[in-house]
Amino acid sequence: MSSHAAVLDTRRRVETPEGVELDLAVAGPVSRASAWLIDSLIRTAVWFAVSVALVPMGPAGQGIALVAFFLLGWGYPVLFELVNRGATPGKSLLGLEVVHDDGTPVRLSASVVRNLLRAVDALPVAYAFGLTACVLSRDFKRLGDLAAGTVVVYSGKVRARRVTAEAPPLPPPVPLTAEERRAVMDFAERAVHLSPERAEELAACAEPLAGRGRDAVLRLAGMAAWLSGRR
Amino acid sequence: MSREEFVRRNGPVWDAFERQVARLEGPAKRRDRTLSLAATEAAPDLAEFDRRYRAVCRHLVLARRRLYGADLEERLNDLARRGHRHLYGRRPGTWAAIGRFVARDFPEAVRAQWKLVLAAIVLFYGPYAAAIAWIAPEPDRIHLLLDSGTVSQLEEMYDPASGHYGKERESDSDLRMFGFYVFNNVGLAFRTFAGGILLGVGSAFFLAFNGLYLGSATAYLLGIGFGTPFLSFTAGHGAFELTAIVLAGAAGLRLGLPLVSPGRKTRGEAMLEAAREAVTIVYGVAGMLVLAAFVEAFWSPRSSVPPEGKYAVGAALWILTIGYFLFAGRRRAA
Image (cartoon, rainbow over all chains, first blue to last red):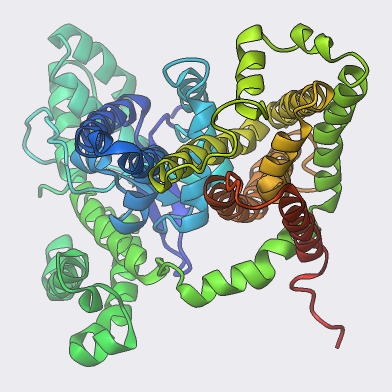
C-alpha cells in the first residue's frame, strides 16, 4: 500500500525476557510540563510552610530550614520516584510515571542522575534545554532522561476515551498488515472531524479495500469497528 | 479459534491475574506489595503469579497475530505491563549496601576514573596556583578579579582585629551555618556534576572558576596578613571540601565524555554506562560535603582551639582523605 517509513506514533515497543513486545505510551512535553507545574506549586507550598514554621525559631530553625530547602529542591522528585512507583504527585495526577527504557520501574541511580541533570535541563530559562531535547528526541526524552536511560510513560491508570465513527462491524476482505490496520482505525477516528467530502476523498485512497464514495467511508468505519473488537 | 472462544477460555486466568496485580499495586501492607518468599507463603495463590504472567504474555502474542481486536490487545498489553513491572522491579538498597559503598564502591569508582580525576585536579588547582602566583606579590591585583563588595566581605570575615574573631559563636548559629553550607556547597557540587553533560565544558568551567576564586582569596588574605584566621578556619574542612569539588568535576567530565568519544559503543549505551559510574562518585561527593559542612559549622570556628591544633587536624584529615582514595577497598590479589 504505502511506501513511507514507520508510522509516527508515540508508542515505544519494548521486548521482555519472555519474548513478548510490550507497548509503552510515551508522554509528551505538554503533559510533562503540566505535571512539573503542579509539583512546583506543591513545593512552593511546602517551602512556605517550612519558612513560616522554622525561620522565626532563630538561627537553629533557619539551619534546619536550609537543610529542608536543600532536600526539597534536589530530593523531592527522587523520593517520590522511588517510593511512589516512579511518579511525583504532579505526574501521578496526570497519569504519568518514570520507567527505565526496558519498562522496569525506575531505580535509585537513574532517578538521581535524571533529577540532578535538571540543573542543566532548566537552562537557560524555564527548562528551555530540556524542552528542546524533549521535542527533538524520539521518545520525548530530556537531557536527564537521555543520560539516565529513562522515559516518561502513561501508566494506564488514566485512560482517554476514543471517539470513532459508528458503523456496523465488517471484517476486512483480506488480511491487513499492522500498519494498514492502524491506518484504517485512525481513519475511523479522524472521520468524525472531517467533512463528508474530505472523508470520501481519503477513503478513496483505499479503493481496493473499500470501493468509492459514501459507502467506502462506512465500510472503512465498519472494518475499524471489527478490528477494534466489536463483532 | 474465534475471538469469543478465546476470551471465554482464558478470561478467568486474566481476571485472576488482574486481581493479583491489583493487590500488589494497592495500598496493602509492605509485605503484600512485593513478590517475596514471605508473601508467597502468606498468600499461596501468589505462587501462581509467574505462571499466569507467562500465560498472559502468550495470549497477548496470539491476540496480536490472530487480529482479535485492538481492545483485547490493549487489555492484555496493560496486564502484561503491570505484571512485568512487579516481576522485574528491584527493591531499594539496605544499610549493608551503604557500608559497602563507603568501604569499597566509592574509592573504587574514584580510582577507576583516575585519568579524569587528574584532569579535574589540573583544571581546579591550575587556576588556583596561577591566582596565587599572580596575586601574592601584589595583593591589590585581586580587585581585577573580584568586586570590592566580595573583597571587603573576605576582609571582614578573617580580620584578626575584628570583634567577632575570638568570640565563641552560639550553637544555634552553628546549626544555621551547617544548613547554609549543605544548601550551598552540595548544590554547587551537583551543578558542577550536571554541567558535565554539556560535553564536559560546564564542569571544566566550574572547576576553573572556583579554583581561580579560592586561589585568589587565599593569596589575598595571606598577602594582607590575615593568614592565620583564614588558614586556621579552613584547615579543618578544606580536605573534604576541595576534594569533593574536584571529584564532582571529574564525575561531570565522565558524564560528558561519551558524547565526545563513545568508543566502540553507541552514544546512548556509552551514556548509560558513564552515568552509572559518575553517579556513584556523586553519592560520595554529597556525603563528603555533608561531613565538610559539619566540620565547617561546628569545628572550624572554634576559637578555643589554637591555630597549631587546627593545622594539625587539617593535615591529618588531608592524609586521611588521600590515603582513603588511594588505599581503601583494594582487594588483595588472590
